[in-house]
Length: 366
Image (cartoon, rainbow, N blue to C red; front, side, top):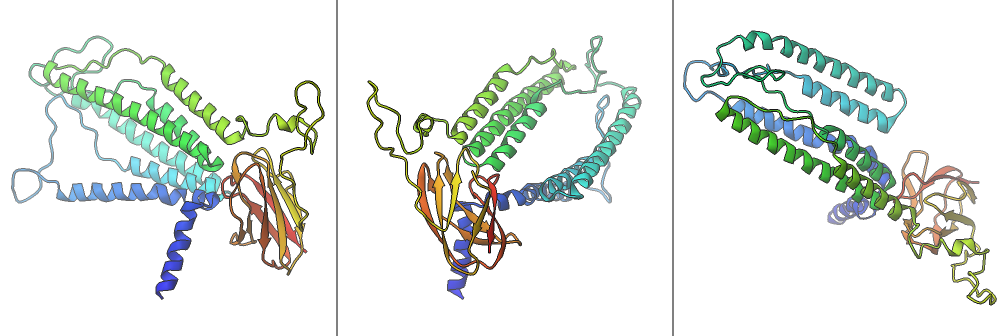
């Protein structure tokens, strides 16, 4: 029993040491649901333990100070979050779930908009209350006294762009994942700085009686430039076009190296040669050169794997149910490896690269 538990633990941790990116992407909705669940649990705990400081036979309804408008409670954020979860599930599963996810998101946003309009309609009634003592008159073109409107910001757009880069990195794999995380960190830190600056302005308004929302925000050129540099770095590291990637040698004829200076004869190529095996699969430019191969059925066979990229690749064979029938070791290219594959029943199998799940092909055992 202990050996079985240890084997299960090793099998579970192996997907993080050599992750199956396709399976991890399918689990993205679960990973996103965990912090949402923890946040909802924390909110329920805070609500259950919150209460008036004065004791009485019943809870006292909180009353905001004069001139302060407090929006009423709403389930709109939770409904919108649920709509996003359904949409993310639709992106992963596909099929009919994708339009269902879009419809759920649109309906949740419409519900949120209705709540916002209802809250907006309540502002004139509260604005007629007696303002706080010492409240300064609001300048022309600014919100009424007691009403705080956050200044415009580019941060939500920047964070959305960074999240898009992160999702692309999770799909591509390798360096692109680090680039996506770096983009999210940069934009999120900028948003926190803006939120801190706004909080300080609100505290100042408590003393002066009026909140200055400031002028229109300037274009975040520095952040856009940082995101552009990160994307360029990710493309360079993921595409295998760096020096020593074989780019210059690729221009030479097959089996030869570039001619030496002075027009001397070409020397023998140092590129690895592909051995004669049952099946030959070649990876080049982050893709398979041949996407349909044939192997013998019900008999062990060998695969000559030629990784012509500088990026790491491997070959994972999956059956019709998506279960892994064979997984070879990762090969850092350019290099050639030979895989010994156990006998496979006749049928069609998919083969992918666990590092770059977008590399997909079909193997027919017959």
